[in-house]
Image (cartoon, rainbow, N blue to C red):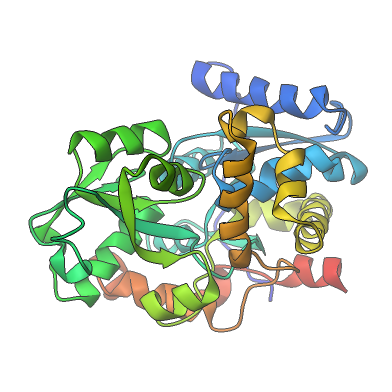
Length: 351
C-alpha cells in the first residue's frame, strides 16, 4: 500500500548537538566493538530512536549487533532521545532520515500537514505498562481514579502521553482532571515514583522490571501483549516502528527496502531465539548490571513484536480511535490512514 506525501529536506548534521553525538558514538562503538556493526561502509543512514535502551525499541540496536544493516550494504548510525516525540522532531526537521518510535505519530503529524509513514511495523501491541507507586496503590485501582493525580509520561506529546489521556477519557476522567508529568524513563522515572513526584505513570521495560524488583510500585495495566492491548484499547495497537518522511521514502526506495530487509531479519531472528539469547546480543550496559533481570524484561515484552514487520490488520483503526478520543486536532480532522503506513517493503522482505 504505497502512498505519497509532502517533502522534507535532506538530513542535516547533528554534530552540534553534543548529547546526540555522544549517543551516536555510543551506538556506533557498541556495534563495532562487538564486531557486528556495519563497519562504517555502505550508504550512510541516520535513525533517531526514542530511547535506544528501551525493550520496545530493541530491534534497532539488535539489528546493528547482529550485523544485518551491514549485510544489506548500509552504514546505519543510531541516535537516541529519551522520548518518541523528540525522535519525531528530529525527523521532521531533517536531522535524520528515519525515526524509531510509535506509529501513532504518523497520524498526529498528518493532521499537522506533515507526510510521514511507517515502513516496517515492529509490534502489534504498545508494550507499555501503567504502574502506580506503592503509596497510591490502594487509591488508584483503575484509570477511573486518575482524577487529581500526577501521572508520569516520557515526554509531553509522547505516545505515553497519548495513551494515558485515552485511558483517562475512556474511563470518564477528563484530560484536564489530572497532571501529566514528563519524567523520561529508567532512573528518572523510578526516582519520581519513589519520591512522590508522580503517583503513577506509563513506562516500558526494562524500567518496569526494575520497579517491581525494587518494590517501588505495582502494575495497574499491562499492555505488553496483544491480549493486554485488546483489553485496554479495544484492538491491536501497532506501536514501535520505523517511520520516515514519505518524500524521502519515494526517492530512496532501494535504501528503504534494505533497511526493512534488515529489520525483518531481526524480527524473524527474535521469534526463534530466547529472551536470554537476545539479551546476550545487546550492549552490556543495557542490563544495568543485572543480566537476568534484563532477560526477564525482554521475555515479558516479546509478545508485542511482529514476526514479519507487516502492519497488523485493524491496527491503524484502533490507533485512530484512541487519538480521536482526546486529541481535538485529530477528532475534528479526516485522517487518511492509508497514507500513514506502507506494507510494500515488509511484504517483499517476508515474501
